[in-house]
Amino acid sequence: MKIETKFDLGQKVFLIKYDSKPTRKPCDKCGGVVEYETPTGVKVRCDKCRYAEYQGHPRGTMGSFLDSEWYIVGTGTIGRVSATRYDYNGGDPDALGMNYQPQKPDSDKEEYMLWETGIGSGTLHSPDKMFATEEDARKECALRNTTEVKEG
Image (cartoon, rainbow, N blue to C red):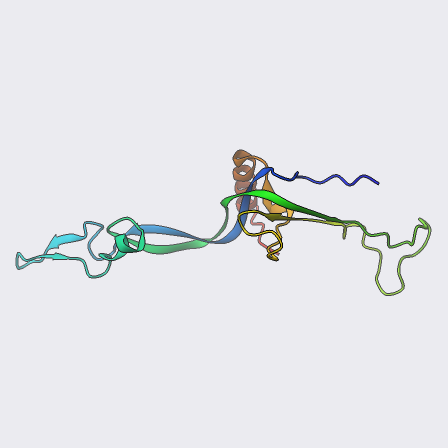
């Protein structure tokens, strides 16, 4: 038996995710200038966003979350491939299936682990959220956002 998978070991992939996408926006108090002059002429640093730069963010910005959407969350390198095939008929194509489970022709599954998220860590990635090129990942995100495909 030969089982073919979407990706190979060592292959770089682009991951997509459905979530609220974190972004940065200009501070709503100082407008992103950080230092400004009060009406009395005193120069002050904005107390709302001045610590952004110490947290690794651009000065004068604040965290913001957009509505949920599909977007590229990052890249990874395939470190483990797992493919599971089921024979619900016990080898008999005319059989009705297992006693305890109905036939599930679509239940064969393919899962991947990435070096970046740990091999054997339990972080499994499904092929429907992984793409070989950034362009393919962007196209799929655009399609899913247009057709309002939500994470299931």
